[in-house]
Image (cartoon, rainbow, N blue to C red; front, side, top):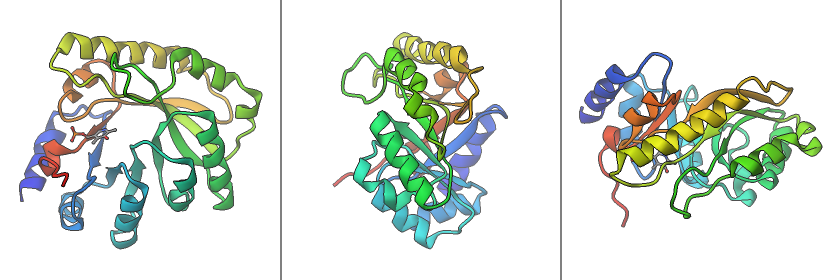
Length: 222
Ligand SMILES: *Cc1c(COP(=O)(O)O)cnc(C)c1O
């Protein structure tokens, strides 16, 4: 019952325009089922194999979001069903997603991951690389991917001002691109905020939060 209560508590604090992705990585099927029974329909996972195993057994009206770093050679396993890929951080990966989406006769929605953290361990495009990529003719020809927004992770720190600075820089970039609508770009999703920082993220314009431990409890990595 704890999961249902946590979900209810978090949902009651989210503004209407903010979508909740329940991050269920490492958690057993029973936990996801409990969240599902409470009405949750969007789940986020960071490993393609684990996500696929869960997709196979859980109800088919769940939207599966890949929030982790994606290896090019594994895209094919999620291409038949994934609804949003958050962590797209290279043109090479976009091309592979396009290829696998085409094989499945789908258009796959993607978020481009932007590097905003001051730590250098996190993946993502710089603003300059993002602009260059979106301007590529080769990009405009990818008809089986749709870039629907941006995603980022802030530095893991207690320093709220720093987190705020990082999120607001992403929001600025998002606003700059918001009106760039082409056949395969329509910027509408700003995915930022996790258990520890989602309130700051929402204050800075997030439209999608990815929350795991505050719903399902701490993860246990053996
Ligand atoms: C694990 C993860 C989350 C959720 O983290 P919590 O702190 O448990 O809410 C969000 N986003 C990404 C990219 C993650 O890998």
